[in-house]
Length: 248
Length: 298
Image 1 (tube, chains in turn purple, green):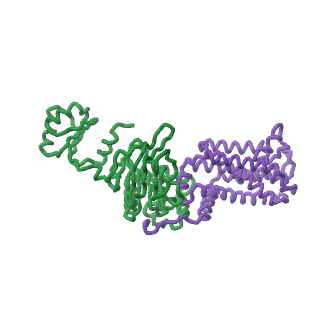
Image 2: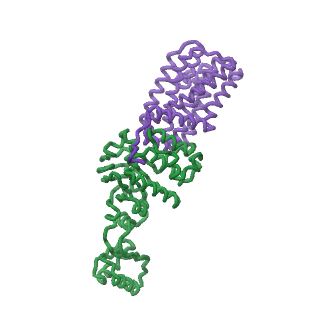
Image 3: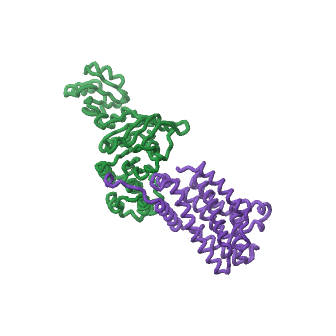
């Protein structure tokens, strides 16, 4: 049973793939996570894309990229922070770290899972927006912006999950989502925000990602400043995660 | 040796969880790490699987450093908190851990052995403590490990589940796996272990086979409902053998012959001393552990 048939690890791609699929299934099983990653972004897209009440007009070229940025924020930050924090409390991270998956494989699996969920979000949200009449261009630039935004928001999510109690992460991640949605320049462009938020929002990862997507998907090219902001946030947050993340 | 710890120290702030532990776990044998709560057993397990970095000292696991990646297929661990994600169906978690290994154990056979079948689709959060323990044990064994670390594997189990776990552990040992099992249950250690290490307050108090630890002493132990210290010299004079007093307990050295028993009970009758327990013959492992670690609550 054990002595005669010593084990070997499964290939790395299979371990990471299994972990990614495990995480994707967890999102699909969890109603609250589905609400924040898909249902709310779809509602925001339909409401803001079909109304002029918020002063955005029915300009889907503004709303649709912003909702894609919101989806990245939902999955990378809120969903990942909450899931990781509760897994950390239950000892799941410790257990998986002792298996052939290891800590690096666990992080890789999480990143792949986030990318898979985001791909699904892009298909659904992009599809709904196109049904509403949106015609995007500049897709390669958008992919780059989405990748950098994912890096920054996953790092922020893991920073919260690895340093705070699970209940505190639940509150903080949801609060951040709401604050960034309202005043972070993600759906409503920074130029249309009141007071100092006009200058502040482009320096936040939410505003930078929103600006980058709005520009490139409207066919105006990929601006450098938002990309630099995203890279800086991502690098600083990743360094913070590496230094402070507690596995138990 | 599958596990060799040398002068191992782990400090949490000012608290010393392990205070210079030296121990070995022989290959192919079951070593029980026995000690009260807070003895440092879990800390040692965490160091062994690389989850905790020792403050000082050395630790070798299957000839490698605990953080060596090659160990993750060779060492299976059942952590005390289980580590199962609460929302996922329990069987799905086990299948997930199995997917990390190239040649895992047959899940149906493992499930049958531990009675997991009816629980397979139930979310972990809806399992009882004992049911979670059985799934956690299955995740430790699913990769056919050479070294199995079991941190309190029978805590919270009912007698039937405990017997099933004991049978599985015996089978693992018969197949040549090395097992390190932490427990505070002395009868569990006495029943299963080839080698016992008594740990208390981060220090090894004794180690050896259960037989070596209980020794060949055929003394007489008298448990009283009062402080026995004033009676020690009196009994020594009466019996003409050494008598050791500890809180509530008198230990009479030498063979407890019928004449000695007669003298002791006669002495108790004459002095109106109430004897709660009179035990002649070998000490149990529990007696040894209590003598080493004390009877008082901490």
